Every structure is written in C-alpha cells, then in structure tokens.
Image (cartoon, rainbow, N blue to C red; front, side):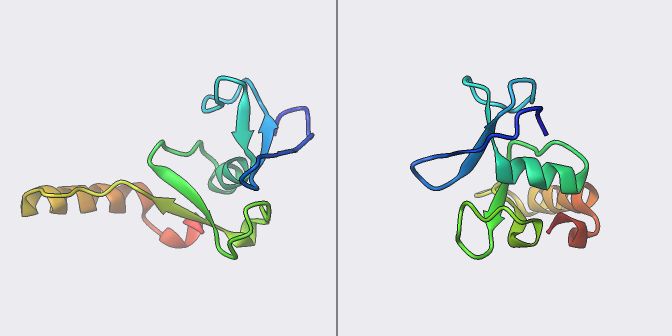
Length: 101
C-alpha cells in the first residue's frame, strides 16, 4: 500500500487510492483499492488482461473474501491448435486456481 491510506469513492462506487509509484496507476496516480488487495493476495502485480470481480456486486466491498480474479483475454475465431496453445499458457500462468480467488 502507499503511504497515504486515504480512500476516495468514484461516481461508479469504486474506491481508489493515490499511489503514483504503482506501475499501473493512471495519469492522476490513482489505483483501485480492489486491484491492490488482489495484488497483495497474489504476491504480484496484475496483468492488463486481469480483472477483479466483486462477488456480492458491492463495488466498495473490498474484503479479500469478496474478490475474485477474472481474466478477459480469450481467443476468438482462431484455429483449434491456437486455442490449445492459449489454454496451455493459461494453465502454466495460473496453475492452482484456488490461489486466484
């Protein structure tokens, strides 16, 4: 976490923190709190194709037990062999999915 623990609420209901040194902060230096919490759980930064989903639909409920790691990358309109290659890469990346939420 950044030194500042001050949280701000977006008009969409998400909490964010100013953390300019984070590699995925936006131009204003903001990072969504739910992404920081998932990164802490995983012990790494999130990839650009990863999303953090709120299980109960409450966007400000960032308890780790309410968060799930989702991915939004999937091939479309590709050869079967390419899909199999992609699936193997996902298995290598995530292995035991129980650690991902």
